[in-house]
Image (cartoon, rainbow, N blue to C red; front, top):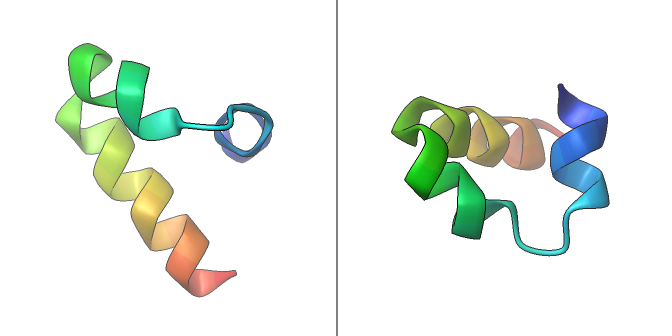
Length: 33
């Protein structure tokens, strides 16, 4: 889950289209890390 977002240079592009929750999770993970 996290590795996929990290591999993507811009997870907010497909993330928003796929699911808003995915974006929020990615952002939270980035802030946590």
